Image (tube, rainbow, N blue to C red):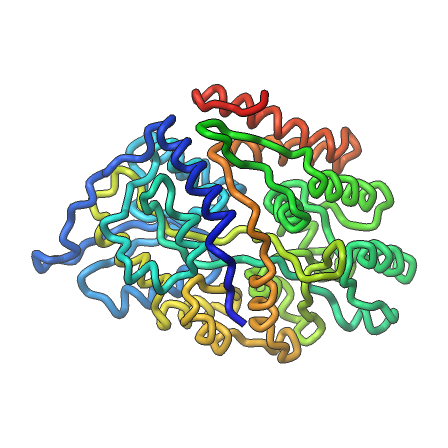
Length: 443
């Protein structure tokens, strides 16, 4: 099964919203961009900042097979863990790299701040046809192309099948079953938890709201509409508050020593993540090979539904003088079988490409022994096909997520509630929109 969202609601909302934010904020500029990618006989050297698993291997493969462009790679923290701040600071200081990793949720903000180049002249119709249409639409703002899409990231649930089998636990198909299973796991082993609320990672919570039918950002005419009071978001908020109150899930920082330690000790026996989590998990606890399995994310009614948790693009910063070379490199990373094979050779990547033709390549390259030979890419296909079509991202993701991260941390410690955190994020978002001179609908 291939990913086949329709080209309607998300595309319309994203495009309309992008037009509004770009008109109000001025959008990114044209930058240097006019190199000839080695046409003078000398190789062009470009710099690239990113953090996704397998990137070093991908860059090494590119440098080994290309003579006209050479890539210097620097690994930076993941976006919300400091990477986006580093990129923004470098742009302001005028010493940004040529290419940067930016997830779909954060792309509108970087565009609205003028941090990126319009790369429309390099993103050809042929390239667009090779990529998932919805990914192309998420990187097309104001009718212009701002990044080359790389992957999609449907939600996925990972669990210790040996623990579930030993305690006669069924893999939950609904959120009601998830709560019951969490309680049963805790009863069987007081230290065991089948999931974690990550207070530092708002994107996981946002994917849950997306899955439940929430829609935080939309446009009304030339104004932004921000709504976190929808039934889906309220349902998710109350549900996770109950899990936290009853001690049925962990609340460790994502991928922290505390969280990975709990994985290694067998105290954390489930992980609510995304397609890319399959490789990450395998890299964190390789000695648990054969003990884990993947399953569809629980849903509210038992029918397939998913949000998208992350997903990466490659963008060119505004002052890069080598936009043509940068896009050529980015295109290779997103469309070349060699690139996907190199990325997955790290053993820690389970990238689900936006280029449909590369998914069989990724499936073949991914070592499934950690999951007992399970066809996890078939699971990703099914999950991706169930991603809701209603969600759109706004231009103030940094403010929204920073506020959520701070307030979630307090709530996880018992100082406030998740409802307080969502309300604070909405209010901070509205203030930031007005601060930037953007119109706000209904408030």
